[in-house]
Image 1 (cartoon, rainbow, N blue to C red):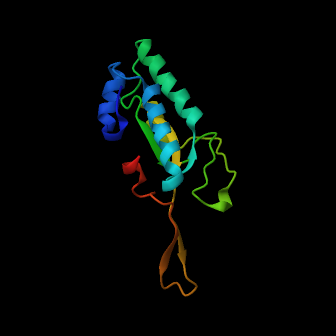
Image 2 (cartoon, rainbow, N blue to C red):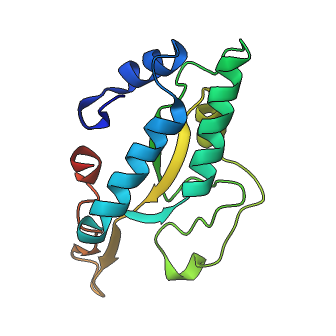
Length: 153
């Protein structure tokens, strides 16, 4: 069993592609850590646990059938909530976009998905405010850990 805490993306992909680890096991470890730690860290706006499991199972099935599961097979990855992901609410951390579920996939997420990446989460987006005189920009919202949470998890 892999210990995901110190594993690099290359180590995970190599291990999954070689059959040393199941992509589903890797996904479950990440999902478990997110469930345990994200309440305090606030890194993620949305966690697509079922989608991550489905994609991990597809990677495992491809490898078992002798097909190439992709260069990044089994690598869990969280995307900034600025990349449209078909069927998953994408808000750019804005109340204005709440409820927007794109009917299309962004180029970034489509290409990474084709390479075997397991898209699990949408991470926060910093929101900035310009005061009325335009003199300064202040950070008014930044989910705790957004910049560093991926290193903690």
